[in-house]
Image 1 (spheres, rainbow, N blue to C red):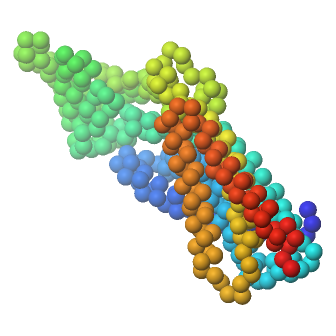
Image 2 (cartoon, rainbow, N blue to C red):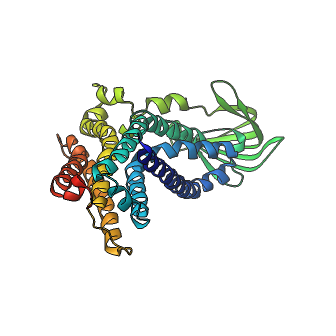
Length: 366
């Protein structure tokens, strides 16, 4: 790399970093608004909130990379054009092909980073995010049982607690529907949560259990002490559930479970997910190549041209729309998963067309 290449490369990196930080900051703010109610209602520590945010960020990074690098190229080359740097370079035996090279090299490096996120980190973060969210919503510790609210625990328990303090729980109401034909209601003056390695139990004192028999007769059983297990093998239930394509590894996508009907019905979605993960890094290179070719094809203007700015932003939006549309179509229609590569093919063809037809890209500005 010569001095000019290093200069352009550095400018692209600085702009990309600033844009990435800005977008991620906005995303974290928006995500925190969604999660803040859950944090407050469950009285969760900041560490859990931080983990949720950190696991949600990798989910958007691969989608952002093509947009970020396109904006970075636009800002860098527009500034160089306004500062007459492009004119000086083109007048110093630098062809526009030479000016494109650092952009392509930079986009290739970003594409490698994007591949890591799209193929490995994003599905892993998706899985961890859902696991953490599932654990929070199904955690049975006393700190997550709200006072004065009907707390739904799993599918079988509804728990109401009037007061909770260091001494335990006060005035407890529990509706148990594990047996649909014979639901029961437990009422106790006090109790406490007992957490063991594999189970969670509520120890109730001075209460009663009410249930209806098959003959619809109400029966009441009074007790001094009662131990109720509310464990539902939550971890096992989570890992045994059907996993969406976005949280599956490449191996799981290529090798669906032949005994699972859900997997059989979603084979096209699995194929589309595989191609999307490969297409996004390629889009990074293809988008950057088209944007830089498009920018260098403009004639020099002494003043800012609003139409030029609108054209570039319109092109970026258009490419993103094509990418999203291709992704949706690849899921809906059988055999259409390769359409995810359409945006990249379109960009490369347009770039070649501009290079071949524009003398400014071949010979430089004269």
